[in-house]
Image 1 (tube, rainbow, N blue to C red):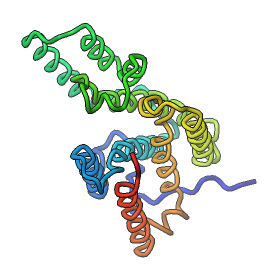
Image 2 (image 1 turned 180 degrees about the vertical axis):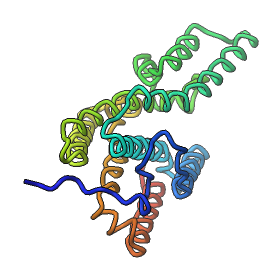
Image 3 (image 1 turned 90 degrees about the vertical axis):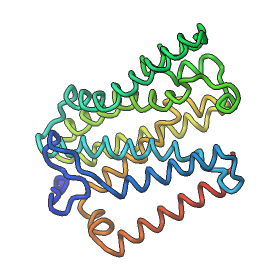
Length: 270
């Protein structure tokens, strides 16, 4: 019989695999990654020729989200042996939705005050409130070029919509996988996530429209699931010993990540 997934030492944890209700752990390294992602997007929209792949900064944000939410789910399961989905969703939504609602309210008030509220924009705002803005823009036939031509004032909510949809699905699937794979929860979770990633890649390869790939939750899911799979890997002690807990391993991972990011930004074609 196979041994269970190995426990993790809290004192050596990359993410604190303890009580999920405690104060969140601040990871400065991820702040740096977020900064690089923002810089990449800004350079891309600044039309710098050498930053043709800067739009991938958005993809990097999805990957970070997948890593963080999966790390939290693993932490809660290891602490309690189950995942309280209602509490998890409540924490996530309280963290994101109030600011989003305030922004949408401000946009709506400004447009009404200026007499520029249209039926189309009103529909965009409602879709953003319902966290389905990406599907709204896709159904309306919005192309990627619309981001640069005459974008909706809430166009950027498409990415938040994908995140919120992922926050509904990923925790539910992850909780089920770890529950039914009781003896080897990480193995079960990793298998399910890998299958989801493969399905998302297959969906992306089967689509010919760039806007469908850009806005689709199913086609963007692979970016989130890469981060989720990394969280599973980090939770395994052998992987941690070879990377996180090893000076050489840490520098190797950081170096490879930095090179991959620079190559993506500089060499990727639009």
